[in-house]
Image (cartoon, rainbow, N blue to C red):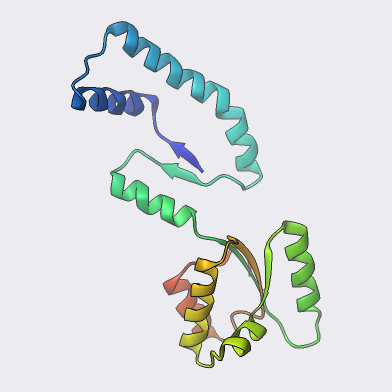
Length: 166
């Protein structure tokens, strides 16, 4: 995650935190804070650009209320999902397994997950899948055979998040 915040706002927030703690800042201390902010931005700009081009950066706008920043962080922490759907015998399971291996994502055969847990309705399948993913250590998945219906897709995107790829 890259927290985007203008240097002026960072300095303003740092000054406010010092004042709230009963501290006063000299001009030298303010100058040192500004230098540290500038050094950080200069030192990380190439790195941020590199990972942004690779699609690996989640940018968080910090120029808003703490509540909005928190919501943005929650959204950024949602998992990366790839849904693999298609008719029987076209090789989707083999493709999904290879994709998961290549991308270091967790592979999930949703048919097996649903059968093992006895989830039969659209609602129970989606709720069970979401609960499973929220409590599993992985954050990136290739879901083989999901969604199975338009209703499942609608429930999933409204309740949890949209897939990275379909």
